[in-house]
Length: 131
Image (cartoon, rainbow, N blue to C red; front, side, top):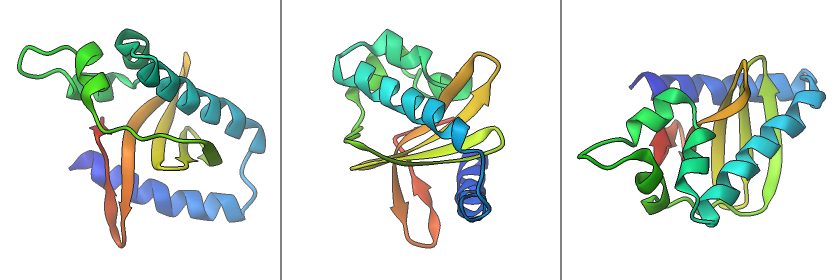
């Protein structure tokens, strides 16, 4: 539930930050992190994909004796060509052709907090990976 509230707030903040001219230099690293995550998933490299997830997101995939490395490869993560990226502080949203990704900036760089996210009108995004 906490993630859904954060994601809903993030979308509202992203819209405001984009109109206020947020730091465009941060957009490319966030976009690159999202692209790297999807490249790992597409290549069947679950371990690499999980290393690009925020700790809470990776932990959310571990269930029923299955590790993150296998679970992330079984999700519906359509991805697609990268589109716009919006950054506000330590939070980012990257739009892909068929997906939306939410990221957080950690000391080691941008990590995916939620992926496989699809808008649901006025409701928070529905995401395959949340953390």
